[in-house]
Length: 436
Ligand SMILES: Cc1ncc(COP(=O)(O)O)c(C=O)c1O
Image 1 (cartoon, protein in one colour):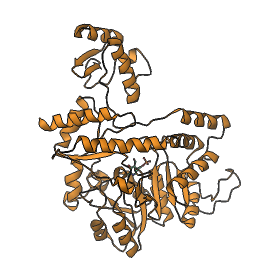
Image 2: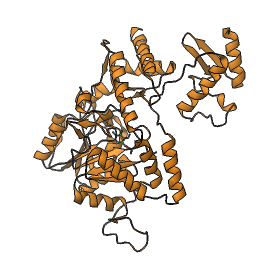
Image 3: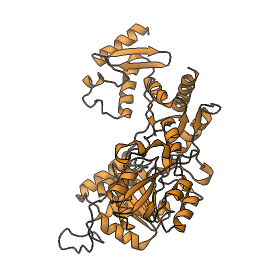
Image 4: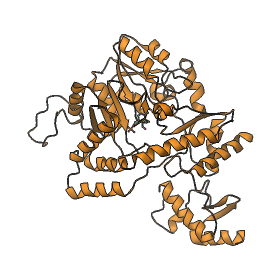
């Protein structure tokens, strides 16, 4: 089919769009679009809005391109959840049971996590931010205390400390892993230091041998932020089970999702009881909402049966999920090999590390993200160092590694829908960018 007629057919389907054909395929674009946002498609299908999930947009674009008799140049998503029939069935069962609160399905989900991680207790909560907050409060952290947090993390880690009324003391990171520098942790300890929150960025373990030893020597409670590290291991042991408590996230960008959701895991029976009380208005066991005893002041941070059903459904495809993230990491490591300007951050796969997201350090990183996006490849630039955010502002000189490294770090696409051919396309595009 001639180029002009392909574009005409696509334009006719879209009603108002523009169509561009390149050597690698066709991209349908609306008028005035800056990227293949797919606007124009909403005329064909009211469910197609700019907020529609990428997988949906890609499917739709595929249909357009089939109509045009060409190949779709799909947008490669950075990450998106994958939700299947098992999840739908389990959620429907909860709806039909008419018990949509924290209940028996939440307990089943907690027990599965206990089995998978090899810990004694798991307490389902609303998200990982509240999990860290509850863990700190359970450890007795409050106003006047200091909690040490790495500069390279999602701001939730520091915010959870602030929610507990304590001061988040930021420390620099190690350049090889972008996780907390044990030396910086040791230097930041004061008589007020009550806890430390090492973060396993992208599922890569923080230097726990050193951090645990320093914490033990100074009587400091370790609460692991394992939001990104569900089922990642170190020396055969699950991350989150090294400290007094570990905190998990089941938000949509994680290995499994419950929409929003989190868990605190612990081996300590007393902390477990306290966590249960704190998450449910001070009640040690699920009550009636009426004549229950409430021995302490607590909060409402419950994970519901509905969310837990989604989580249990996601666990049914766990092997496939874990295999996928490992394959993504290997494909990027091989595809970017030999490029001096790119460092794929390491994961010790043989030791059990699970690379949730593939993070790389790239020269001219700020230019790379728009370059990729213009070519239909989504990616996620790293967080800004926490010390640069208005609520936690401190001078750059105190965080030389985070200040230098974090603006050069980016997560490459590794969603469950990303194939090895997609990774090859991303790697080719990065090589093209570096050759510029
Ligand atoms: C390192 C880290 N800590 C904490 C959180 C907060 O988790 P949630 O969104 O479940 O509150 C996240 C969220 O992605 C995270 O990446």
